[in-house]
Amino acid sequence: MQARTRNRVVFLILRRMRVPLLVLIGVYAISVLGLVLLPGIDAEGRPYRLDFFHAFYIVTYTITTIGYGEIPYTFSVAQRLWMVFSIYLGVIGWVYALGALIALARDPAFRQVLVAGRFATGVRRLREPFYIVCGYGDTGSLVVHDMDEHGLHAVVLDIDPDRISELTLEDLSIFVPGLCADAGQPDNLLAAGLKLPLCAGIVALTSNDAVNLKVAITAKLLNPGLRVICRADTHDTEANMRSFGTDAVINPFEAFAKHLAMAVHSPDLYLLYSWLTQTPGQPLPLRYQPPRGTWLLCGYGRFGKAVQRHLNFEGVETVIIENEPEMTKAPKGTIHGRGTEAVTLREAHIDKAVGIVAGTDDDANNLSIIVTARSLNPNLFQVARQNARENDALFEAARLDLVMQRSRIISNRILSRISTPLLTQFLREARHQSNDWVSELVDRLWRLASNRTPDLWTVELTPDGAPAVHAALSGNREVRLGTLQNDARGREQRLNCLALLLKRGEELRLLPDDNLALAPGDRILMCGRPGVVNQMQWALVNASALCYLQTGEWRAEGTLWRWLTDR
Picture 1 (tube, helix red, strand yellow):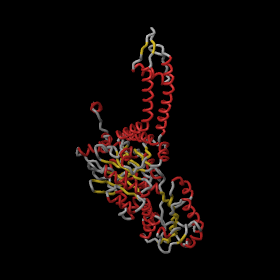
Picture 2 (cartoon, one colour; picture 1 turned 180 degrees about the horizontal axis):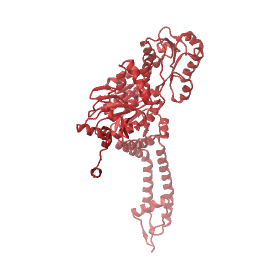
Picture 3 (cartoon, helix red, strand yellow; picture 1 turned 180 degrees about the vertical axis):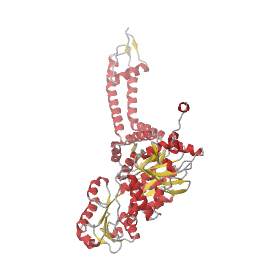
Picture 4 (cartoon, helix red, strand yellow; picture 1 turned 30 degrees about the vertical axis):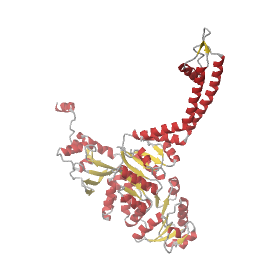
């Protein structure tokens, strides 16, 4: 790819500068030839002629306005006249050539090639695993910021130059190379490092499902082992992506609709999902209990259809309000209108409703629907769709019960899959547990987290992930799970953490017991207060710390310390 970029630069230069270079060559050739043919007079009055080398030497420093003098002898009148002609001819040639060179430097195509070359070089210089993020809109920018907070490297492709300009101005702690290019073109993905060994995965977040689909196909064909995560706004695209092995397909409308239905069916399970997928350190969301009864659903697009389907599955009745019922193929009984008018909401019997979902693709209309509905029935459970992140302040001021923010839903899901892959498996298993099991776990997390979203991390008992523990297990020393959850600064104290899931081969164990004997290769999903992961890391990598946690004694390390201890 680097050689191809260099070839494109050389090709553009030669193509755009061909005529100016020929003009300069012609100017020099005429000037040199004339100076060679015109006779001069030496110091003794004898005629002489310059050879081609000295003529070229004189023309070079004269036409470039350097000035050096008349050599080897004073010029004759004819030679001086010819030099005057050559000077003016050379100035015209150089002005033309320099103008063409400046035009080339300002040429968008040439500048794009240079930018692409610098971008490819910046990607190759990365020394940590990175993810290619295709699309830097609301969702993409949020994903990149969240990755930056988690210490994950990213490379960005976006077809909008303004968004790439915004990327360069962002206050990120990690350098993020960005290129204005179509992510659907394989060459651009290759330039972004698709086939580099450090490329850990690709995230397709453009607003075009067709582009996301092509990105997924390209990644699976050119680098089959790569992790591919895609956004899809339609069921057809989602099914197509899953058909060829895309690792994760995120449909934000379906995701939120499932969570809303989950909140109706099992509020504690919804709370568990919210706590474990939200950014660590934020205040814990409150427990919601969406009421059963009749709900008003304003907007019957992709979002509205998903919400209606999942609410109806839970036995919740919905009344649809749609401004274009024929276009959206709304069912019979749909109320015609936007929902922003009080007369429309009264026609939908808002006085008898228990909840309302403002789900249009216009934030102003959604807020208007909520304000109007609240004035008619202040007891409604209020849910609204937020389409643009810049309206955060407005939706926060509206004090809604639930806000569907597409960017945040997608970002949380992507980060959970990238940073803690075991979380997806844990949540999948948790859905099959009883309400009592979920409620008890929520209570434990509440006491553990101290009203802040817990941090999540994965402990891998491998030579790289936990060298001290792996060495002990390989040496047939028993290590129990509870040992790792004690504080190496004082083994009587327990760290504020909880093991959610242990994966051993294909076996999954939910909330494993502290007395469980660990085995090499085990992967453990932990959660705890922010900063606990650093305290636990000490026992994972330091043999003395692990020995202290097991026996209560510090084991000396190194030949010198062991000698001093024996003494």
